[in-house]
Amino acid sequence: MNGHYDIAIVGGGLAGGLIALAVRRAHPAMRVALVEAGDTFGGNHRWSWFDSDIDAAAGALLGAFPAKTWHGGNEVRFPSYTRRLEADYRSLDSRDFDATLRRLLPQDAILTGCLVASLSADAVEIAGGKRIAAARIVDCRTAPPSPHLTGGWQAFVGQTWRVHHAHRLARPVIMDATVDQIGGYRFMYLLPLSETELFLEDTYYQDTPRLDRAALERRIAGYVSGKGWKGEVIHSETGMLPVITGGDFDAHRAALEVPSVALAGARGGFVHPLTSYTVPIAVANALAIADVAADCDGPALARFLSERAQRHWSATGFYRLLGKMLFGAARPEERYRIFERFYRLREPLIERFYAARSTPADMVRVLAGKPPVPVMRAVGALLGKGAPLVQGDER
Image 1 (cartoon, rainbow, N blue to C red):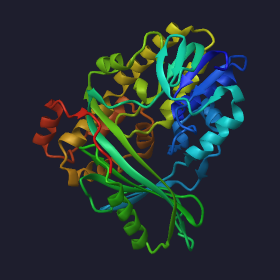
Image 2: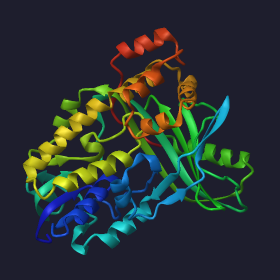
Image 3: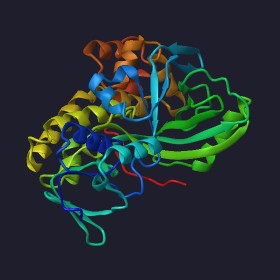
Image 4: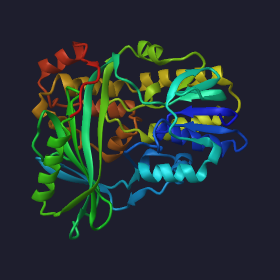
């Protein structure tokens, strides 16, 4: 099928798409394949990031995509205060991600509608008998539920609304936690896409992997009505993301590894374990792979990413500890207090936290002072093992 490729990236989500584009830009002579089971790249998602999250090289790669940009800062809302933060904010719709990849990648690199049956060191076997041969293979498919990891879940429904009159929301609201706290830490996430279009996401940090879509849609409609907005939904999405608090990372990777096949994206463990905030990590990983792709054969690239994943797991232990506190020490309806306290800290610390680049001084500052959870529950959470991250149902 389409001959022999120098590198095949399996899974055309954010991580896979960025890797394909980064390799293509760094090594135009390399033949790249981006293999996706669905009909489009990126699925049905929206990804956002702060300008401060990325350096110039990352900005150059992300600059290929038509992201929406807000230069007026952003804000958070809690029961006891509202705070405006100064960082510029950007957001990318997966439909624009798909269109850009189709425009910038060669036609023979675009392999959508290809459901993978199996992988080996030098080939991708497609259901139905087709075969894609490649010298290097990177597996970026969706990470399956893992009994080897522990934690909770971030469940959400997102909707784009077209309102009949200007909504007058001046800037993104990263968290509006003034809403009723139902089943866990709940907040609304708001993006003013235009004067009459709004993206609203109802998000929950909850113990179980269950998403009642109809209930969340009703709550979003109630929120819209409460703000005095009238309009209709023109697009929607749902998500259920793991919030990783611990586990056996080696066993998790061993269950997914194929000899000499590199693991990247969430499947490889390249996530922010607490926030599921992926753009800074995904773009840094894509650039790192592009730097070595021409000099590494398949086994060497697999080792490179395995070592990089181990370093990432070690570097993000602080966020897993905070996740244990969130799920194990805070009562579900009181979890908002942890974030309420966190957002009183200095803005550079908050930005580094989301980019998974907290300094040792940041960590001390986050943990200093009176904890927003009962001390004995905190001790119990730290000593506990946590619940395995196995998937449930969606209604």
